[in-house]
Image 1 (tube, rainbow, N blue to C red):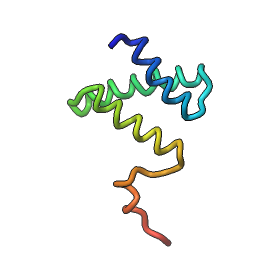
Image 2 (image 1 turned 60 degrees about the vertical axis):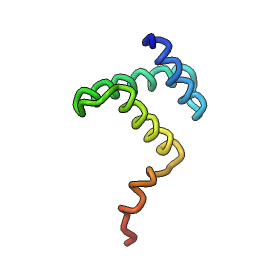
Image 3 (image 1 turned 120 degrees about the vertical axis):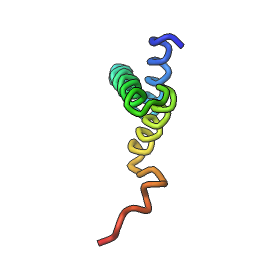
Length: 76
C-alpha cells in the first residue's frame, strides 16, 4: 500500500471520530510512524502494531479502557 493511501485511510478513521481534516492527517502520520517504531521494537509487523494503536485510539476517544485492562482497576 502506498504511504499516502495508508495515511488517508487512517486519517478517515480519525475524521469519523470527530477530528478535523488537518488534525486527522497529522494524527494518522504520527500513529503510522509510531507503529513502525513499535514493529521494530517488538519484532512484529507494522500492520499488527497499527491495529493495536488504532484500537487503543478508538477506546480512548470513547473514554474507555480496553476490556482486558478494565479488570486491573481497584476501587478505593
